[in-house]
Image (cartoon, rainbow, N blue to C red; front, side, top):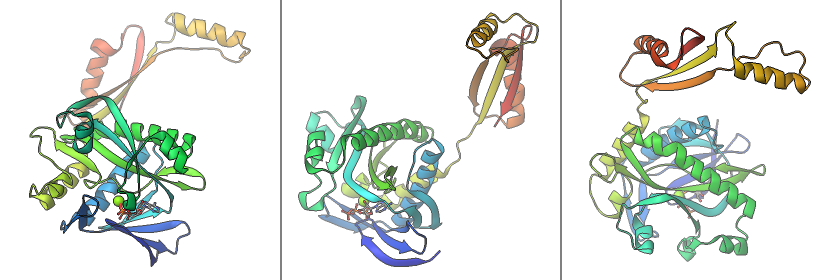
Length: 317
Ligand SMILES: Nc1ncnc2c1ncn2[C@@H]1O[C@H](COP(=O)(O)OP(=O)(O)OP(=O)(O)O)[C@@H](O)[C@H]1O
Ligand SMILES: [Mg+2]
């Protein structure tokens, strides 16, 4: 794949054309800006961290059913992505009060929201990225109501996926910003997911692990970006197990019998047998896969199944 001309240079990334139709390269820079570009600096290694973290997060989101622009990481600070016609609305999801939200609501920093708050901002440097209401977005024609609903529900879903992801790595996801765009009429999540565009707090010490370290001159900026990447790269420890429980052949299964009768009365004459069981998933920590299987079998014998009348099957991932 060939890197071609520079299409756009933003504050954090350069976007290049490629010889692949519809695909662009996003090159992540070490330059950092804050407060509408009034504060400028360099965070050594930031481009690398942000590209690699975006790669990990976008792949994780894809695995969990979110459609994104991501194709692949092609060098330590470059991503290959689909080119999107960007929608100039930034969607912010907030789990805790911080920055402008703390001010707006008069809440102390770090107050947890009763439920996640979604805000919209106009991606427009000249106007200073003002906050928008749904009606403003309609007035400006930035996105249709259906598009805005879709972006909002994807953003909330991303929050549901990423909060536990970060929690498992000892990090609180306080808030984050998403940008979306269109490819062949379809809304895809674009841009980046990095410490530049979210607030991350160490779950144990409360230490700030995001761009606020740069904004507020808290020091150890490079080290903290590197630490976030280290934690995000960590494979989650533990083993996933699935247990399938079903009534033994010949054992009376009233739910199965009733369903069999109902299926027949709906015209599914070919059904001869229905047995209804249950499916249980478990996650175990601090055990090897072999040992985990033994332990889960024991759990089945003692609690999860009734071995006299039920069969069970254990699968370990
Ligand atoms: N898949 C994509 N296709 C096209 N453009 C994208 C894609 N993902 C992100 N962009 C855009 O690339 C630009 C460069 O990103 P960067 O973060 O450097 O810009 P920015 O400084 O935040 O914004 P801007 O300079 O546009 O005000 C942004 O305008 C962003 O919206
Ligand atoms: Mg940006």
